[in-house]
Structures are given as structure tokens and as C-alpha cells.
Length: 315
Image (tube, rainbow, N blue to C red; front, top):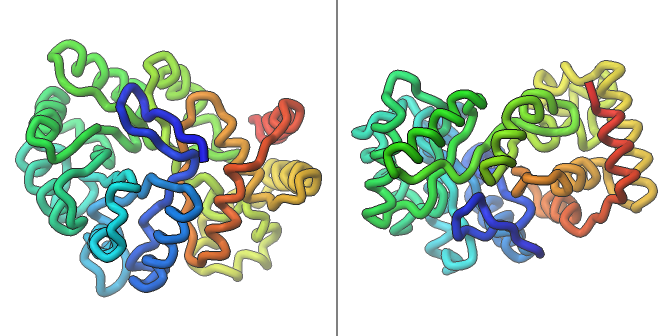
């Protein structure tokens, strides 16, 4: 599986990333191990998680995903085959981006992950209450200490991300080498209008989330009756059940039929083909589902097919 550089860093990333939000939530430890083995076996290498995953589950407190990944790393011996990405700022136990919090949070993540370094450490959200230079300075000390290789950001607007890059340059600090925005065929404008020109000009890696729009782009949810298939996703998908969403699905169906592929594979293939995009994040709760998603990496969409998808999803 062809790998891509993450920004100007030395990290080399396969074109699909695995989202660890399911670990300790919709996938128990045994299933999580199976998924991780299948992901690496299928050529994947970037595992994306966060310290807060999965605090929203009744009975959880946060840290469950990192803990499961850490146990898998120890049992499998595959630490050298994967790129581990985690995040700080959103967990109630370690909120925000103050230097003190970052230092405490990273040590907890390292312990749970059972590793001596994090390949990609990301600010999970912006924290305007802390001067950008202080936050980046704290990340710089983690890199100097060998605890972190590269830093990135998630959920930053274009103006604040540009500010962060300027502060890094002005103070000689490590810069965010990646951005993690929401981006998919039915949610394009937020990324393309302001963020995409910036990241392409600055050679920033992009690891997009909600790649399948909470499952809508899989084609499983085509009308209101289908929403009952998943209590967890039904609410998130409902907003796409409109003429625009149906137009996107119809185009996905047509392109998928031409390739003997699935709508999900085509939706991911469109993202993989997007210039400047490093890897969309996918999640799966079964090995069969994961194998389907990995199939997107071998899908070769033509220029005409990409143009059809662009047109159907525009607006």
C-alpha cells in the first residue's frame, strides 16, 4: 500500500487511518485486537485515538481506547509497524492546552499506550485562553525529550491554524504538521473554502474525520425508515436525507457499479484522490467491514468519475 509523507515530517502514512474511537465502546478488547491485526495486515499503519476516548460511554471515564491499543501493542509486538496518533485538550481530566496540562496528559497517554513515544501528538481543539507560543513551546519540550515525534491539530479554523504556523516560524518552534478536519462528500465547504488553500500552500498533512458522514455515504441510510437501523448514528445521518444527499448517493451507486465496488469504497476513493489529503480516518466494528473499507485503497477512480462526484456533491 503506497504511503504518503505527513506534512514536512518524516512520518510515512498509508492512505487510510483507523479511528480508535470505537475501542472500548462499540468494539470490546477482543474485537479491537482483531481489528488492529486486520488493519495492519491489510497495509494500514496510522492508528488515531485520543485521551478522551471513550469517556461518553456509561461506565467509562476516558483513556479506554489508549489502554486497549497499549495492550495490543504489547501483545502483538507491532509497535514498529504502526504510527500512533493521539490527542490532548478535550478530556475533562486533562482539559485545554496549557503547558502544565500538556505535560501531565502526555505522560498519562504514554503510560496507557505502553510506549516511550507518540508519533503524532495533536491538539484536539483550539484553546484561545493560552498564548499560542506557550502551547507550542510545551509541545517543543516534548519533542526535545523524545516523548513526541511530530505535532498536529484538530478542529482548528483557518485563521487560528495560520496563527499557529506564524508563531512557530517567529519563535523557532515546531509547527503543526497535520490538520484533522471534518471532510467528506456531503460536508465539503468547511474544509475546501478556507482550510484547503492554506494547508496545500504550507504543505500540511490532512487526516480527515467523518469520512463516511457517520455512515450515510455507505448507502445504508436512504430514507427515514433506515435510520432505525442504528440508534447511535440515526440522528447524525438524518440531516443528509435531502435532495442533495440523495444526488450524492445516486452518483456513488453509479460509480460503484462500474467498479464492482461499494458506495463506501467510492466515497473513500474520492477522498484518497484529493490533492493534499494524506489519509481519511475510518472506523469499523467488524473485520469484514474493515476489509471492505481497506478495499478503497486499490480503487482507481477516473478523472471523469471524480468530476461526476465533484459535481453531484457541490453546493
